[in-house]
Length: 370
Image (cartoon, rainbow, N blue to C red; front, side, top):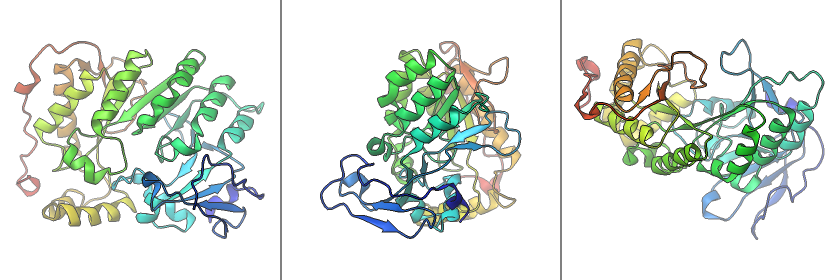
């Protein structure tokens, strides 16, 4: 396996994870040939059905291939994600570990238990140039498992103490646990925080992102970060065709994001790469079967929705963003991220009744919702 080269040999102490309940199993797994791996299960409801592979990595800082305009390095203390988002683009990466991109991605979580100490060592190298490091770009660093393993405090501390700027993208309100650390880090280095909230439609959220905090709780976290002076951008992602993209849904979501005091909003339409595509279609067939033909038509040319659709979504969000005081910044580089649409920054209170804005998104009959 490609990832096994990152592992070091040596036994993992069974006490690396906090507070294993009675009945938890600790065995040596043969999955990662280069390392003795502790396989652990927990009896608590939040972790029922999940298996954690505690490994010790020799490297945690990952260089982003090519020239990224947003960041050059990433840290991913986990592989796999208990958020169980059916559309997650990172699903295919789980196949590198000889797991599948579906249920295994949701329930077989690899934990780099020594991540804080390794990253501290890597940041101390004379060759380190203090380039920006991004977290949450592959799987969520504040997924539920972080509540048990507590890897992020050590990572944040190491980054701040080394003078390394960093960004965090998450759906996890657990980030608020580390608010004092983030406030302290922001006094020493640039810190950029973003929350992913694709929609405030809770009926869709319950099925498409079943392991995540609710949109309302995430908006509360945005508000808390804004009140603390750190600020938090919102990736309005992903916007799901025919499920969360009606004019009224977009308007309500943008209004809620602006009301929470978000620093900016960046709309991103769902993209379906290999691995995620198959799992998403399986979910769609079970949950919204009437939409399957429409999705196959919309995504018939690849992983991304056609540009005309993306442009319509972006235009609609732009109009609502202006109405609610979120406007496009004059200069780029605000860390909004995305690559589909652009950011709209929170600069003022609403100056127009956004409810009057009704962009026509559905002129094309072959993909119009019922």
